[in-house]
Image (cartoon, rainbow, N blue to C red; front, side):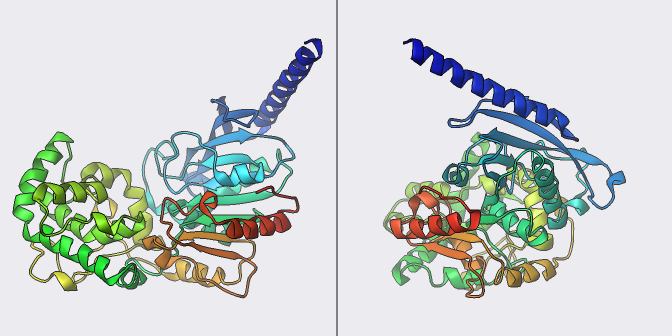
Length: 426
Protein backbone atom coordinates (compact mmCIF):
# COMPACT_ATOMS: atom_id res chain seq x y z
CA UNK A 1 0.00 0.00 0.00
CA UNK A 2 2.94 2.34 0.78
CA UNK A 3 4.37 1.87 -2.75
CA UNK A 4 0.92 2.26 -4.34
CA UNK A 5 0.37 5.50 -2.43
CA UNK A 6 3.78 6.75 -3.54
CA UNK A 7 3.04 5.87 -7.19
CA UNK A 8 -0.28 7.72 -7.07
CA UNK A 9 1.38 10.74 -5.49
CA UNK A 10 4.09 10.80 -8.14
CA UNK A 11 1.48 10.49 -10.90
CA UNK A 12 -0.56 13.36 -9.47
CA UNK A 13 2.58 15.43 -9.06
CA UNK A 14 3.48 14.76 -12.69
CA UNK A 15 0.00 15.79 -13.83
CA UNK A 16 0.15 18.97 -11.77
CA UNK A 17 3.65 19.79 -13.03
CA UNK A 18 2.57 19.29 -16.69
CA UNK A 19 -0.43 21.53 -16.15
CA UNK A 20 1.64 24.25 -14.48
CA UNK A 21 4.27 24.04 -17.21
CA UNK A 22 1.62 24.34 -19.93
CA UNK A 23 -0.04 27.30 -18.23
CA UNK A 24 3.30 29.08 -18.04
CA UNK A 25 3.67 28.53 -21.78
CA UNK A 26 0.14 29.78 -22.44
CA UNK A 27 0.79 32.93 -20.42
CA UNK A 28 3.71 33.66 -22.72
CA UNK A 29 1.68 33.42 -25.93
CA UNK A 30 0.67 36.80 -27.43
CA UNK A 31 -3.01 37.41 -28.27
CA UNK A 32 -4.21 34.39 -26.27
CA UNK A 33 -6.60 34.26 -23.31
CA UNK A 34 -7.46 30.94 -21.67
CA UNK A 35 -9.48 29.23 -18.97
CA UNK A 36 -9.60 25.63 -17.80
CA UNK A 37 -12.40 23.32 -18.96
CA UNK A 38 -13.19 19.68 -18.22
CA UNK A 39 -10.31 17.42 -19.16
CA UNK A 40 -11.19 14.71 -21.70
CA UNK A 41 -10.32 11.13 -20.85
CA UNK A 42 -6.71 10.36 -21.67
CA UNK A 43 -5.55 13.97 -21.52
CA UNK A 44 -3.73 15.80 -18.74
CA UNK A 45 -5.51 19.15 -19.09
CA UNK A 46 -7.81 21.15 -21.34
CA UNK A 47 -8.49 24.85 -21.94
CA UNK A 48 -10.87 27.07 -23.79
CA UNK A 49 -8.80 29.66 -25.62
CA UNK A 50 -9.75 33.00 -27.11
CA UNK A 51 -7.23 33.95 -29.77
CA UNK A 52 -7.14 37.48 -31.14
CA UNK A 53 -7.44 37.38 -34.92
CA UNK A 54 -7.37 40.28 -37.37
CA UNK A 55 -10.41 40.67 -39.59
CA UNK A 56 -7.99 41.16 -42.46
CA UNK A 57 -4.66 39.41 -42.07
CA UNK A 58 -3.21 41.75 -44.70
CA UNK A 59 -4.23 44.89 -42.81
CA UNK A 60 -4.65 44.58 -39.04
CA UNK A 61 -5.95 48.14 -38.79
CA UNK A 62 -9.32 46.84 -40.10
CA UNK A 63 -10.16 45.46 -36.66
CA UNK A 64 -10.15 42.10 -34.94
CA UNK A 65 -12.26 39.38 -33.28
CA UNK A 66 -11.57 36.57 -30.83
CA UNK A 67 -11.58 33.03 -32.14
CA UNK A 68 -12.62 30.19 -29.83
CA UNK A 69 -10.30 27.18 -29.72
CA UNK A 70 -10.32 24.18 -27.38
CA UNK A 71 -6.89 22.89 -26.43
CA UNK A 72 -6.57 19.33 -25.10
CA UNK A 73 -3.04 18.60 -23.88
CA UNK A 74 -1.21 15.27 -23.83
CA UNK A 75 2.46 16.14 -23.95
CA UNK A 76 4.90 18.71 -25.31
CA UNK A 77 6.60 16.12 -27.55
CA UNK A 78 3.39 14.51 -28.83
CA UNK A 79 2.04 15.28 -32.29
CA UNK A 80 -0.64 17.96 -32.50
CA UNK A 81 -3.92 17.68 -34.41
CA UNK A 82 -5.52 20.93 -35.53
CA UNK A 83 -9.23 20.34 -36.15
CA UNK A 84 -10.59 22.67 -38.80
CA UNK A 85 -14.29 22.93 -38.02
CA UNK A 86 -16.49 24.39 -40.75
CA UNK A 87 -19.04 25.86 -38.36
CA UNK A 88 -19.36 26.66 -34.67
CA UNK A 89 -17.65 24.55 -32.02
CA UNK A 90 -19.51 25.28 -28.74
CA UNK A 91 -17.99 22.39 -26.75
CA UNK A 92 -14.83 20.35 -26.81
CA UNK A 93 -14.68 16.88 -28.31
CA UNK A 94 -11.80 14.55 -29.05
CA UNK A 95 -11.64 13.32 -32.63
CA UNK A 96 -10.68 9.85 -33.76
CA UNK A 97 -7.66 11.31 -35.56
CA UNK A 98 -6.30 12.70 -32.29
CA UNK A 99 -6.97 9.39 -30.55
CA UNK A 100 -5.33 7.36 -33.31
CA UNK A 101 -2.17 9.48 -33.35
CA UNK A 102 -2.01 10.10 -29.57
CA UNK A 103 -2.02 13.81 -30.31
CA UNK A 104 -2.61 17.07 -28.54
CA UNK A 105 -5.66 18.66 -30.08
CA UNK A 106 -6.55 22.22 -31.09
CA UNK A 107 -10.27 22.25 -31.90
CA UNK A 108 -10.87 25.46 -33.86
CA UNK A 109 -14.21 27.22 -34.27
CA UNK A 110 -14.61 28.69 -37.77
CA UNK A 111 -14.52 32.47 -38.13
CA UNK A 112 -17.94 34.17 -38.32
CA UNK A 113 -19.68 31.41 -36.35
CA UNK A 114 -20.99 31.57 -32.76
CA UNK A 115 -18.41 33.19 -30.45
CA UNK A 116 -15.78 33.52 -33.19
CA UNK A 117 -17.58 36.45 -34.78
CA UNK A 118 -16.73 40.13 -35.06
CA UNK A 119 -19.20 42.70 -33.76
CA UNK A 120 -20.04 43.67 -37.31
CA UNK A 121 -20.31 40.86 -39.86
CA UNK A 122 -18.44 42.40 -42.76
CA UNK A 123 -18.64 39.44 -45.11
CA UNK A 124 -15.83 40.73 -47.33
CA UNK A 125 -13.43 39.16 -44.84
CA UNK A 126 -15.09 35.75 -44.91
CA UNK A 127 -13.08 33.85 -47.49
CA UNK A 128 -10.65 30.95 -47.58
CA UNK A 129 -7.60 33.19 -47.65
CA UNK A 130 -8.63 34.76 -44.32
CA UNK A 131 -9.98 31.51 -42.83
CA UNK A 132 -6.75 29.63 -43.47
CA UNK A 133 -4.68 32.57 -42.23
CA UNK A 134 -6.53 32.17 -38.90
CA UNK A 135 -5.39 28.54 -38.79
CA UNK A 136 -1.84 29.49 -39.77
CA UNK A 137 -1.60 31.97 -36.90
CA UNK A 138 -2.78 29.30 -34.45
CA UNK A 139 -0.24 26.86 -35.88
CA UNK A 140 2.61 29.34 -35.54
CA UNK A 141 1.65 30.22 -31.97
CA UNK A 142 1.56 26.61 -30.81
CA UNK A 143 4.69 25.53 -32.64
CA UNK A 144 6.48 27.45 -29.89
CA UNK A 145 4.99 24.95 -27.40
CA UNK A 146 4.66 21.67 -29.29
CA UNK A 147 7.67 20.13 -31.01
CA UNK A 148 6.04 17.07 -32.58
CA UNK A 149 4.46 16.43 -35.96
CA UNK A 150 1.28 18.22 -37.05
CA UNK A 151 -1.93 16.80 -38.49
CA UNK A 152 -4.93 18.73 -39.82
CA UNK A 153 -8.39 17.19 -40.02
CA UNK A 154 -12.01 18.23 -40.42
CA UNK A 155 -15.40 16.86 -41.41
CA UNK A 156 -17.72 18.03 -44.20
CA UNK A 157 -17.29 21.81 -44.59
CA UNK A 158 -14.55 21.46 -41.99
CA UNK A 159 -12.92 18.88 -44.25
CA UNK A 160 -13.06 21.30 -47.15
CA UNK A 161 -11.34 23.80 -44.85
CA UNK A 162 -8.65 21.17 -44.16
CA UNK A 163 -7.97 20.91 -47.89
CA UNK A 164 -7.84 24.66 -48.48
CA UNK A 165 -5.64 25.15 -45.39
CA UNK A 166 -3.07 22.75 -46.84
CA UNK A 167 -3.30 24.54 -50.20
CA UNK A 168 -2.53 27.96 -48.73
CA UNK A 169 -0.03 26.72 -46.11
CA UNK A 170 1.54 23.47 -47.38
CA UNK A 171 4.27 23.46 -44.71
CA UNK A 172 2.05 23.97 -41.64
CA UNK A 173 1.18 20.30 -41.21
CA UNK A 174 2.72 16.95 -42.11
CA UNK A 175 -0.55 15.13 -42.87
CA UNK A 176 -4.09 16.25 -43.74
CA UNK A 177 -7.16 14.05 -43.22
CA UNK A 178 -10.35 15.59 -44.65
CA UNK A 179 -13.56 13.62 -44.16
CA UNK A 180 -16.57 13.76 -46.54
CA UNK A 181 -15.17 17.02 -47.93
CA UNK A 182 -16.51 18.47 -51.20
CA UNK A 183 -14.38 20.46 -53.62
CA UNK A 184 -17.15 22.06 -55.65
CA UNK A 185 -16.69 23.52 -59.11
CA UNK A 186 -19.69 25.81 -59.23
CA UNK A 187 -22.38 27.50 -57.22
CA UNK A 188 -24.54 24.56 -58.34
CA UNK A 189 -22.09 21.75 -59.12
CA UNK A 190 -23.72 19.55 -61.77
CA UNK A 191 -21.85 16.44 -60.63
CA UNK A 192 -24.46 16.27 -57.87
CA UNK A 193 -27.20 15.73 -60.48
CA UNK A 194 -25.25 12.90 -62.11
CA UNK A 195 -24.73 11.22 -58.74
CA UNK A 196 -28.43 11.36 -57.85
CA UNK A 197 -29.34 9.94 -61.26
CA UNK A 198 -27.17 6.86 -60.70
CA UNK A 199 -26.90 6.07 -56.99
CA UNK A 200 -28.76 3.04 -55.64
CA UNK A 201 -31.12 0.91 -57.67
CA UNK A 202 -33.44 2.09 -60.41
CA UNK A 203 -36.39 0.96 -58.26
CA UNK A 204 -35.23 2.99 -55.26
CA UNK A 205 -34.69 6.11 -57.35
CA UNK A 206 -38.21 5.72 -58.75
CA UNK A 207 -39.64 5.34 -55.23
CA UNK A 208 -37.88 8.56 -54.21
CA UNK A 209 -39.26 10.43 -57.22
CA UNK A 210 -42.78 9.05 -56.73
CA UNK A 211 -42.73 10.17 -53.10
CA UNK A 212 -41.74 13.69 -54.16
CA UNK A 213 -44.54 13.80 -56.77
CA UNK A 214 -47.18 12.65 -54.28
CA UNK A 215 -46.03 15.25 -51.75
CA UNK A 216 -46.29 17.99 -54.37
CA UNK A 217 -49.67 16.83 -55.64
CA UNK A 218 -51.01 16.63 -52.08
CA UNK A 219 -49.29 19.87 -51.09
CA UNK A 220 -52.47 21.62 -49.99
CA UNK A 221 -53.44 18.85 -47.54
CA UNK A 222 -49.86 18.36 -46.33
CA UNK A 223 -49.18 22.05 -45.74
CA UNK A 224 -52.41 22.57 -43.81
CA UNK A 225 -51.05 20.07 -41.25
CA UNK A 226 -47.43 21.23 -41.43
CA UNK A 227 -48.48 24.77 -40.54
CA UNK A 228 -49.53 23.47 -37.13
CA UNK A 229 -46.19 21.69 -36.84
CA UNK A 230 -44.37 24.93 -37.68
CA UNK A 231 -46.50 26.86 -35.19
CA UNK A 232 -45.70 24.36 -32.44
CA UNK A 233 -41.98 24.70 -33.09
CA UNK A 234 -42.25 28.49 -33.47
CA UNK A 235 -40.73 28.40 -36.95
CA UNK A 236 -40.76 31.74 -38.74
CA UNK A 237 -40.67 32.13 -42.53
CA UNK A 238 -39.62 35.58 -43.67
CA UNK A 239 -36.51 34.85 -45.72
CA UNK A 240 -38.53 32.24 -47.62
CA UNK A 241 -42.29 32.02 -47.56
CA UNK A 242 -43.79 28.90 -46.03
CA UNK A 243 -44.84 27.74 -49.51
CA UNK A 244 -41.35 28.25 -50.93
CA UNK A 245 -39.80 26.45 -47.97
CA UNK A 246 -42.07 23.45 -48.55
CA UNK A 247 -41.16 23.12 -52.21
CA UNK A 248 -37.45 23.53 -51.47
CA UNK A 249 -37.70 20.78 -48.87
CA UNK A 250 -39.37 18.40 -51.34
CA UNK A 251 -36.65 19.07 -53.93
CA UNK A 252 -34.02 18.53 -51.21
CA UNK A 253 -35.38 15.09 -50.34
CA UNK A 254 -33.14 12.89 -52.59
CA UNK A 255 -29.99 14.83 -51.62
CA UNK A 256 -30.67 14.31 -47.92
CA UNK A 257 -31.84 10.73 -48.48
CA UNK A 258 -28.47 9.64 -49.87
CA UNK A 259 -26.33 12.00 -47.80
CA UNK A 260 -27.32 10.07 -44.70
CA UNK A 261 -27.85 6.66 -46.30
CA UNK A 262 -31.52 6.08 -45.61
CA UNK A 263 -33.37 2.83 -46.21
CA UNK A 264 -35.22 2.51 -49.53
CA UNK A 265 -37.62 0.05 -47.90
CA UNK A 266 -38.91 2.77 -45.58
CA UNK A 267 -40.09 5.16 -48.29
CA UNK A 268 -43.90 5.39 -48.08
CA UNK A 269 -45.79 4.07 -51.08
CA UNK A 270 -49.08 5.13 -52.65
CA UNK A 271 -51.07 2.88 -50.29
CA UNK A 272 -49.71 4.58 -47.17
CA UNK A 273 -51.71 7.34 -45.51
CA UNK A 274 -50.85 11.02 -45.41
CA UNK A 275 -49.65 10.85 -41.81
CA UNK A 276 -46.95 8.33 -42.73
CA UNK A 277 -45.85 10.49 -45.67
CA UNK A 278 -45.58 13.57 -43.47
CA UNK A 279 -43.66 11.78 -40.71
CA UNK A 280 -41.20 10.39 -43.24
CA UNK A 281 -40.75 13.86 -44.73
CA UNK A 282 -40.11 15.38 -41.29
CA UNK A 283 -37.65 12.63 -40.37
CA UNK A 284 -35.55 13.10 -43.51
CA UNK A 285 -35.81 16.77 -44.43
CA UNK A 286 -38.40 18.75 -42.50
CA UNK A 287 -39.01 22.48 -42.60
CA UNK A 288 -36.63 23.65 -39.87
CA UNK A 289 -33.72 23.95 -42.30
CA UNK A 290 -35.64 26.53 -44.34
CA UNK A 291 -36.94 28.60 -41.42
CA UNK A 292 -35.46 31.97 -40.45
CA UNK A 293 -33.50 30.54 -37.52
CA UNK A 294 -31.52 28.26 -39.84
CA UNK A 295 -31.06 31.00 -42.41
CA UNK A 296 -29.50 33.14 -39.69
CA UNK A 297 -27.45 30.32 -38.19
CA UNK A 298 -26.02 29.24 -41.53
CA UNK A 299 -25.69 32.71 -43.06
CA UNK A 300 -21.88 32.60 -43.05
CA UNK A 301 -21.92 29.12 -44.60
CA UNK A 302 -24.20 30.30 -47.39
CA UNK A 303 -22.02 33.34 -48.04
CA UNK A 304 -18.97 31.14 -48.52
CA UNK A 305 -20.94 28.72 -50.68
CA UNK A 306 -22.30 31.49 -52.86
CA UNK A 307 -19.04 33.33 -53.41
CA UNK A 308 -16.15 30.84 -53.62
CA UNK A 309 -16.81 27.43 -51.99
CA UNK A 310 -19.64 26.32 -54.26
CA UNK A 311 -22.67 24.20 -53.44
CA UNK A 312 -25.55 22.58 -55.30
CA UNK A 313 -28.94 23.29 -56.81
CA UNK A 314 -32.16 21.42 -57.62
CA UNK A 315 -33.12 19.99 -60.99
CA UNK A 316 -36.73 20.75 -61.87
CA UNK A 317 -37.19 19.15 -65.31
CA UNK A 318 -39.09 16.19 -63.85
CA UNK A 319 -41.51 18.38 -61.88
CA UNK A 320 -43.16 20.46 -64.60
CA UNK A 321 -46.56 21.66 -63.48
CA UNK A 322 -45.97 20.60 -59.86
CA UNK A 323 -44.07 23.62 -58.53
CA UNK A 324 -46.20 26.67 -57.86
CA UNK A 325 -43.83 28.82 -55.81
CA UNK A 326 -40.35 28.25 -57.28
CA UNK A 327 -38.97 29.05 -60.71
CA UNK A 328 -38.14 26.24 -63.09
CA UNK A 329 -35.37 28.14 -64.86
CA UNK A 330 -32.76 28.71 -63.72
CA UNK A 331 -32.84 25.76 -61.36
CA UNK A 332 -33.45 26.81 -57.75
CA UNK A 333 -30.21 27.14 -55.80
CA UNK A 334 -29.57 25.62 -52.38
CA UNK A 335 -27.54 28.75 -51.52
CA UNK A 336 -29.46 31.33 -49.49
CA UNK A 337 -27.23 34.38 -49.31
CA UNK A 338 -27.47 36.39 -46.06
CA UNK A 339 -29.88 39.32 -46.40
CA UNK A 340 -30.31 38.15 -50.04
CA UNK A 341 -27.22 40.11 -51.00
CA UNK A 342 -26.07 39.62 -54.57
CA UNK A 343 -22.44 38.62 -55.01
CA UNK A 344 -20.95 36.81 -58.02
CA UNK A 345 -19.56 33.32 -57.62
CA UNK A 346 -15.88 33.01 -58.51
CA UNK A 347 -14.79 29.49 -59.44
CA UNK A 348 -11.09 30.36 -59.87
CA UNK A 349 -9.92 29.31 -56.40
CA UNK A 350 -11.81 26.02 -56.20
CA UNK A 351 -10.62 25.13 -59.71
CA UNK A 352 -7.01 25.73 -58.67
CA UNK A 353 -7.44 23.69 -55.49
CA UNK A 354 -9.15 20.88 -57.43
CA UNK A 355 -6.11 20.61 -59.73
CA UNK A 356 -3.66 21.01 -56.84
CA UNK A 357 -5.13 18.00 -55.00
CA UNK A 358 -3.96 15.75 -57.85
CA UNK A 359 -0.34 16.20 -56.76
CA UNK A 360 -0.64 17.22 -53.09
CA UNK A 361 1.19 14.67 -50.89
CA UNK A 362 0.29 13.05 -47.57
CA UNK A 363 -3.47 13.58 -47.82
CA UNK A 364 -6.09 11.06 -46.67
CA UNK A 365 -9.53 11.62 -48.24
CA UNK A 366 -12.25 9.67 -46.43
CA UNK A 367 -15.64 9.57 -48.16
CA UNK A 368 -18.78 7.45 -47.98
CA UNK A 369 -19.84 5.75 -51.21
CA UNK A 370 -23.50 6.49 -50.41
CA UNK A 371 -22.95 10.13 -49.48
CA UNK A 372 -24.21 12.68 -51.99
CA UNK A 373 -21.16 14.81 -51.24
CA UNK A 374 -18.87 12.07 -52.57
CA UNK A 375 -19.94 13.33 -56.02
CA UNK A 376 -17.71 16.38 -55.59
CA UNK A 377 -14.89 14.81 -53.58
CA UNK A 378 -11.27 15.53 -54.46
CA UNK A 379 -10.38 13.61 -57.63
CA UNK A 380 -8.33 10.43 -57.30
CA UNK A 381 -4.86 10.66 -58.79
CA UNK A 382 -1.83 8.45 -59.34
CA UNK A 383 0.49 11.49 -59.24
CA UNK A 384 0.57 11.54 -55.44
CA UNK A 385 1.04 9.19 -52.50
CA UNK A 386 -2.27 10.36 -51.01
CA UNK A 387 -4.96 7.87 -50.01
CA UNK A 388 -8.55 7.90 -51.31
CA UNK A 389 -11.34 6.07 -49.52
CA UNK A 390 -14.93 5.69 -50.70
CA UNK A 391 -16.24 3.43 -47.96
CA UNK A 392 -18.90 1.02 -49.19
CA UNK A 393 -22.27 1.32 -47.50
CA UNK A 394 -21.16 4.41 -45.55
CA UNK A 395 -22.58 7.93 -45.70
CA UNK A 396 -21.88 11.45 -44.42
CA UNK A 397 -22.11 10.47 -40.75
CA UNK A 398 -20.54 6.99 -40.93
CA UNK A 399 -17.55 7.44 -43.26
CA UNK A 400 -15.05 7.23 -40.41
CA UNK A 401 -11.83 5.38 -39.66
CA UNK A 402 -13.62 3.31 -37.00
CA UNK A 403 -15.92 1.94 -39.72
CA UNK A 404 -13.17 0.94 -42.16
CA UNK A 405 -12.48 -2.68 -42.98
CA UNK A 406 -9.37 -4.17 -41.39
CA UNK A 407 -7.58 -3.97 -44.75
CA UNK A 408 -8.54 -0.32 -45.27
CA UNK A 409 -7.44 0.65 -41.79
CA UNK A 410 -4.15 -1.27 -42.05
CA UNK A 411 -3.28 0.66 -45.21
CA UNK A 412 -4.08 3.94 -43.47
CA UNK A 413 -2.04 3.12 -40.37
CA UNK A 414 0.95 2.03 -42.47
CA UNK A 415 0.92 5.28 -44.48
CA UNK A 416 0.44 7.51 -41.44
CA UNK A 417 3.31 5.78 -39.64
CA UNK A 418 5.60 6.43 -42.62
CA UNK A 419 4.52 10.05 -43.08
CA UNK A 420 4.67 10.98 -39.40
CA UNK A 421 7.82 9.06 -38.59
CA UNK A 422 6.52 7.04 -35.64
CA UNK A 423 4.59 3.82 -35.20
CA UNK A 424 0.84 4.17 -34.97
CA UNK A 425 -1.00 1.35 -33.27
CA UNK A 426 -4.33 0.92 -35.07
